[in-house]
Image 1: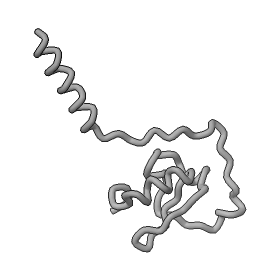
Image 2: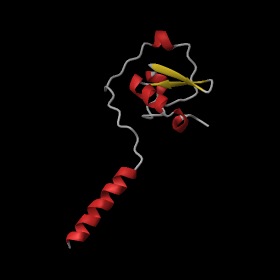
Image 3: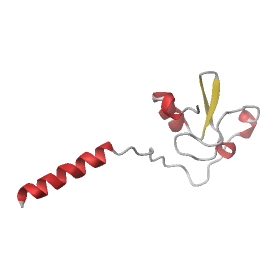
Length: 91
């Protein structure tokens, strides 16, 4: 019985550690963007590739990857993108 509990616990830990999760980003409930600073920026994505928030309304940061400009709702999402852009970039 004891070995069954230990096996179940180890299996649970293994499954949770291998699960790919979307980063949990805590955004403010009412984000504002300075549209004056970003009004002429053309980005290739309509939503933030990290948190999937629409970037058209909350574009705060951008990053260039393979000659394409990506828009982000926050510097946190931009930093996450820069860590591994290949996994988030549009094909």
